[in-house]
Image (cartoon, rainbow, N blue to C red; front, side, top):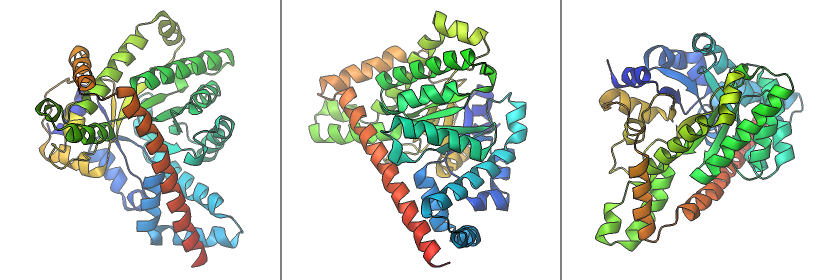
Length: 367
């Protein structure tokens, strides 16, 4: 049994953090599903920018056709991305059915420029759900303050959601509350709770990158000793919060009505520091019931030399808390780190979206 199979047997859902049209038409994605244990796909603005810019020929005819129809750049981006996500959803139909709707999911994100606009996010989430028109899609909504009520409203409308850009455990608790509030309203509206799925995407490697930079400035032996400890500890504390949420009476009532847990999803699992083991954000965050969405390089690294050592999350809460206590002793504030990462994360996605718009505009002019 290889590492990808061992993770799957352990109960980890392996998703690919990448999508482009060539993967779909060439059979590459189907091969990853069949032979690399890939059980879902996540996308974001950076992924779509890379897809269209690197795979210009795959999109050229459609861009030309839509330009001739008078579509503007944002309308064309919507068509390109929803068409790709719909096609990927279709490739996962069998797995989606076999897993009872848990896996076989493909995510598409609302325009990141709407991250601080609740009403517009709600409207676009519904539009994307309708346009993709596949029950195994997930609509990605960022876990900003404005995103929280949008998550509740979207879930209340019976739409499955991938909550993205979560960094802090405190914000994650708000995400859990937003999801459960949406389920309560969905049940009152007569929606089938068993058909609603959600994941909470907790970003990992960016936490180490931010904290390690601060530790290098502090540069004491105690600080250097803590390098590379923050991100995994942060994610493990998120898992503690998840387990505690599932143990409440409120959740028990929703579960009895058919609700599905909002699974933690480990995102940003490619290492930023080349000195670190390139499988660490997979192997050290392996536990039944989580999702790990990996860039292809990380997927291949795990496949080639990953060594699964069993569950590395359950029971680690006290040790994870101790890591952050030690970091606080070095003057590193967990809340401040995560707040900055959220702001930067939103801006990075906006920048990628604007780059995607430029890429498509250039293609429109050449059509």
